[in-house]
Length: 272
Image (cartoon, rainbow, N blue to C red; front, side, top):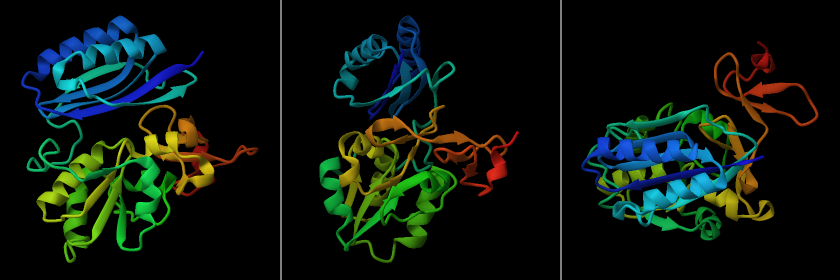
């Protein structure tokens, strides 16, 4: 048996997050759906798993709300629930950034379809930036991408001001796991005076789903925040686990019992 995994978000005004929390918790429980949904006044952000029918029913409930009719989800499969339980939380932000003025509902970068992404990032005049954290970059990224070396997303504004501010006219192409961090990052860049900002529509997950391995410029696997740890092309589970000592991703070499932690860089990290 396999389960369906859905990742989704939408930046839109939510006047009563508590009421939405109650409704979504009830809808998930009714369908046996597990995972995490974050709700804030700026919108919703979730990754959940369940049966095909359960996930479809949940999404039907969400999109029946006029605020979320155009909600787009990205799907993948897992051998079992990658989440232990259901969490529906009200937060200050649906992705922590710390810059209230960066409002994706007002302005974001130009969305680029996965099929057009390769042409953009191979343009020598384009700066390609991975907006994710350093340990995610270590697991996999696009060929030629810059690593901001952030430990948390709220460090990204400092990276921009420290590294990019001298030439605001250059084209900047950004990407992240599912697209949500790029929404905040691109809104911030536009507010900071960068006019030529692009972002990968649907993020890495949609790219891996749509682009064949032989045409891909992705190298490695895509870290995800659930028990699957990382996904490869076709949105299939990769050869990673979490280090028992430091909690960072461990890559298992096929045909070997050895594993290398990308943080500690030591095989023994996998030993308990």
